[in-house]
Length: 81
Image (cartoon, rainbow, N blue to C red; front, side, top):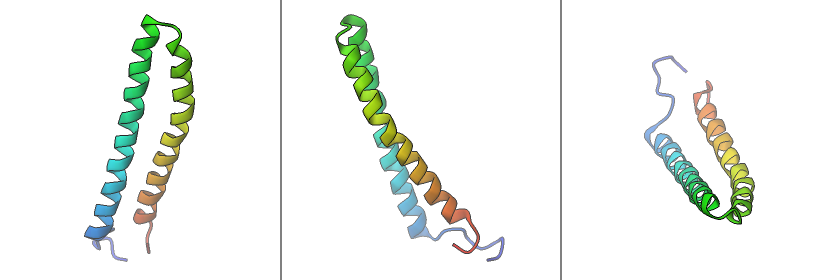
């Protein structure tokens, strides 16, 4: 592979972009839930337990999505892939 050769073709780049959009959507949704439950928790401490549960359940998914995206991107940047 020459340094001037493209790292990805258009379809590979589009697929990676779609994964990024899905990941971004999931992260935005998680933060929306956390923000809403945080506001409710300020008004009513009973909601803080729901907030803690939501954070524990959803953060692992976000970390997995970020890791998978990073690996997919890294695989495209390695020579010979």
